[in-house]
Image (cartoon, rainbow, N blue to C red; front, side, top):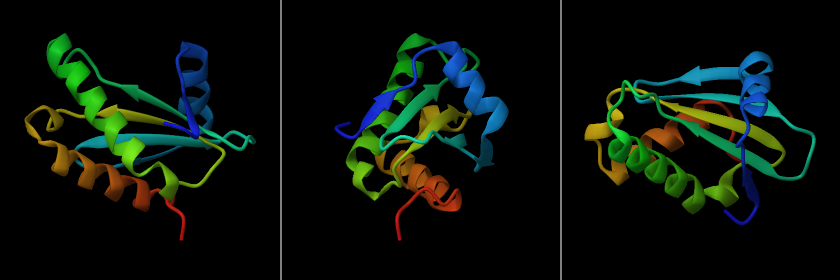
Length: 112
């Protein structure tokens, strides 16, 4: 992620949750908020209801890799929080990436 940073602290997540806009599909939810800087910040949240730590970490890696491969397609200056839903553990990378891009396009996060 050469143009982006991670959201790491709980207050940063809370600001995006409270002030941001949410869009959802069957596999995940995105909250996004303009941050007024020239870079994106991304956060990923996976509940313990989804699975054990190995499964949760795998989902985080899949979402992060989907973002990394498509990073140049995203608008700049946005904080994004992705929340995984229960269908994600059984999906492969291609399905996760397709769902990720569908959600980003639905939210108007992609350029052009």
